[in-house]
Image 1 (cartoon, rainbow, N blue to C red):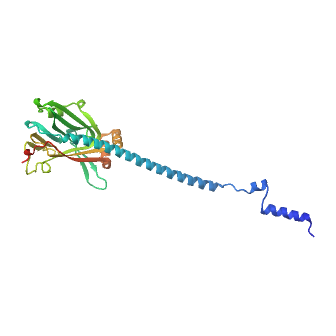
Image 2 (image 1 turned 90 degrees about the horizontal axis):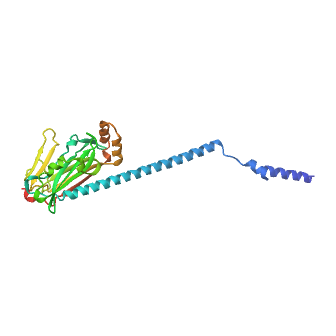
Image 3 (image 1 turned 120 degrees about the horizontal axis):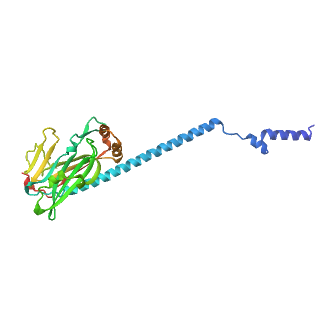
Length: 299
């Protein structure tokens, strides 16, 4: 015969083994994280954080790149608009002794900068020219000239400067081209930095490039070339001759690359640095019609 005490002992034993009850039994049955689980969790969290940092860094680089390109595009467009608006106003003096227009390779950039094109074995030749032209405003002749002045000797890059002077019509504009070429830097206005290419090409009334091989040469316009360097070509227009069209090209470095270039101390290192960053040069090109062209100058 089973006594009540035996039933109580079995009940207590079953309750203790099967379903723990009481504060002491619950606390002893909880399991803590092992060292391996903590290490795995830390590794996963580190992986996630590194991924987020990489994504943030890439986003920041893309943002900076877009802002840099925006700045260069704005500066290039503003410079292009300024120069093209003035080129449109070019006018002939109707004086055989007066220079209406001339363009030549800048003496400071006789050794052009060559840059390797991405994905190609070809080299881009950056030509830097200077030019002068005459225009008429009310009762004044206005001579305007543009020139790129290098930051360092044989550097291949410089800053674009503008020169201008007005004289009364009665006094004439005979000496304005000479004053432009001999003007001190203090008489120039700084327009843009980081210019690696600055080129102006002249076209006749039919849209043909004015060059020595033309069949129909414009009157009162000369073209001559330095025999030492074929690129030292000069187009000179006097009397009633001015180009019917001109094509302006400006190549500008991104500001970040320009600042890194300036930090280099060696001239050869600067030039090599620029030759490997052709993709960071933004080229602006525009063909400008000359409003005051005298078509009788073209046979």
